[in-house]
Image (cartoon, rainbow, N blue to C red; front, top):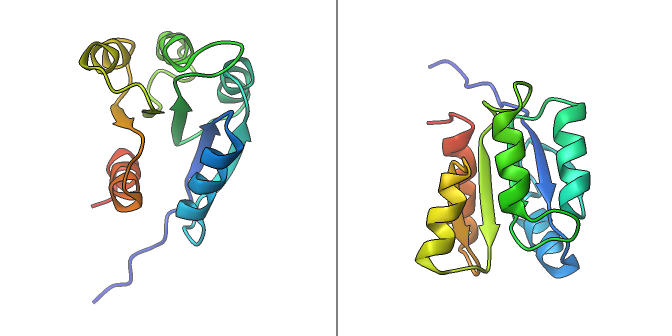
Length: 129
């Protein structure tokens, strides 16, 4: 049996809440991913366009630009349009989910969420089986 290589993914996280950010870091602790953290939508957009990432996790409600706006901008940019985006938000309305997916998000996950579900979504977006 061949050993499977551990993929080091570059993940950009945009989250303005200290509590939510620490929770995400705890969930991802021990995974082989390199994390870049931004605290608002403008920083997230700039970081995504400045360096390649394998996955972007965006909060929706952030200062500067909201996650919907950042997602739309990144999906229109040739440098970032193929990068999977997970919107992670407390906005639970069906119209919010519709709007998020319409902006190009690959997944829309509402808070609170189970850590295992988030890890499964991350693996799915990174192409892991």
